[in-house]
Length: 167
Image (cartoon, rainbow, N blue to C red; front, top):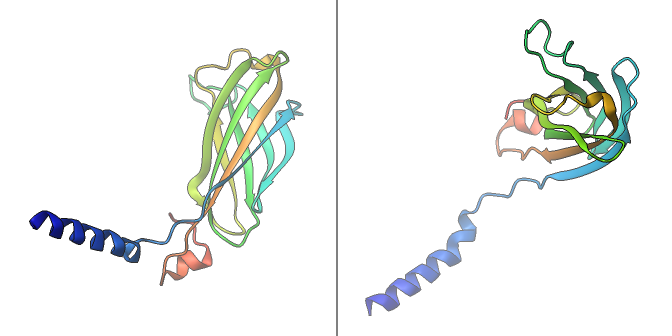
């Protein structure tokens, strides 16, 4: 008889589980686009947008200039990101650089510096290429992926509702 009680108790508990569930955070969205690699003085203007989050420019810094005065600097790409939306969002980016034959020359990923980009804020993401980069002079195209997840407003949190930038 105890077994029957346990099953009924478990079914009753599981039936009540949705009452305790937290509201789901908004789903992330992702977009990818391939571009020709044609920076002018290391700067390439692009247009990639998702949910009013936009990547407008990439600065491709070669190893000799990336990282300032460090002895062992590596190439990097610094992306300018604008949040023109009404909500704070987590923003991630990934880039893969290819030669004319489609061979991968470098790849990396990163995100907005504080993790969240507040509504109306402009930010940057730095992507370093620390290990595989020695053929970047042969680059012809790159694939850029932008991933966005709006921040869930917390009940009674005025900063969250107003689009504050802390996670």
